[in-house]
Length: 275
Length: 286
Image (cartoon, rainbow over all chains, first blue to last red; front, side, top):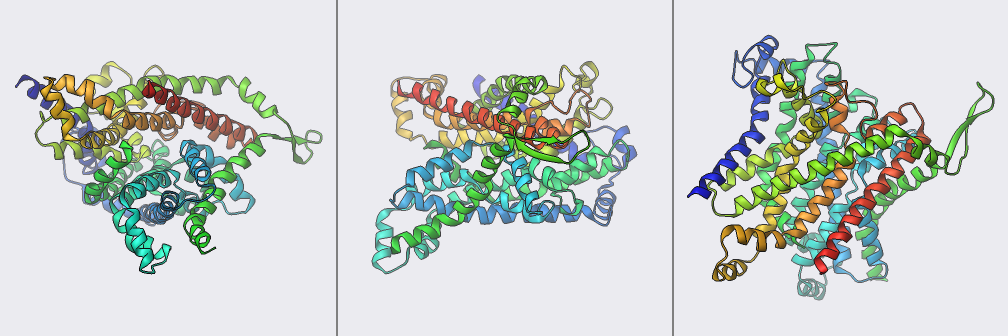
């Protein structure tokens, strides 16, 4: 009994630690600028969320909506396409024997250990040689590559796609690529969702690459946009409420994605981490 | 021949992008780091010439850079064990059968992971500000944004974001332990603490190693949090972490030196993660 109480106490305290800041953000985003600094931070004053949202989306010709759209394109697009590419590569490394297989796998694995931020500066230099910095593609294309996804895909493909099934498909005359898309991806689906989510979060969080690559505000992802507003708060105090409201809005898509996909997320993670 | 063709279809798309956006930048950074910019006379045109290891010599003589390396190492030595210890504790509790409402807790702890590092840092920056913070009892007595404490204030931001994620990885590994193992332990008369210590933790060690490696990489890359905190605290300089140094050096712009910083940082990260992996593998073999 005593240990049950202690366990629940630890869980309760941890819940407060993790959720109070988000509660604070939510409450803060519903207040007017005056109330924000003068009323109790963890409880509501006059409900001003609608007004704040309206200001957020109309400020500077609705640049915030543009940032959200950019983020969804950069992140959703890169994660979706990147997952397919990583899955194909990892699947081939798991299911086919060929010369150089281990070498390729080891190089990709080395890529997992290379910090993404170490790549941002040389990528900028390469893109500037091609006069391609400050474009959508300068952030999108590098974001497609996810070596960790290849690593996970190889593990999952080994574990979840039986050889006999592939043999049977071959006897039926199905081509290898067709078999992959028609059969293997179905078996690997929970794993693919996991890879997708990992990739999604990595791109969503990547800050240095857009910071270095982009000068044009209209191309910013929402993280960089909020950051740039936050650096101006001291000169333009009205931005503070926009930063807070924008922060709240910016985390909603990811929270929603997690809630919707969490079933796959967990089952896929398990098989990846144990191996 | 046909066999080769489908291999190309599978591997080439990823392979080309990997070569273009992973391998090529590394090669290019190494090349850039071996060059230097010189001018003929004071106002003459600038041109790049081969400089050998000159940039690296500058990296090694650069005091602020090594201070920043020391800072993130100190940060990692404290923050990574605290974060992973908390993640392990919460995962074990979730798995222990002592806790009701597991689904809720799992989600509640995981929500901060949905908050991008930049946004989390902005949020906590407000929460630390004495005149806005709801935690006045704390902020009245300690200035969390002062030179002494701001590093640990940032450690808290990183911990807050990543505990739930690491907990989920460890918890998933715990769920994968077959029930028979526990039955055997029960027959041997092992209590819950003993089971956790002698059975669960050793069996989820691979998951803990994985999360540690990712945390080491993350620590050395620390950028978004200090960059954001520069607006809240004057104690965070433009060379506060190695990555900030790279960024501020490249905005001078001194690309050759910045490239050398990048190469040294990547090598250090690689070496640290690799050593840790090897070290734990050797421990497991014994």
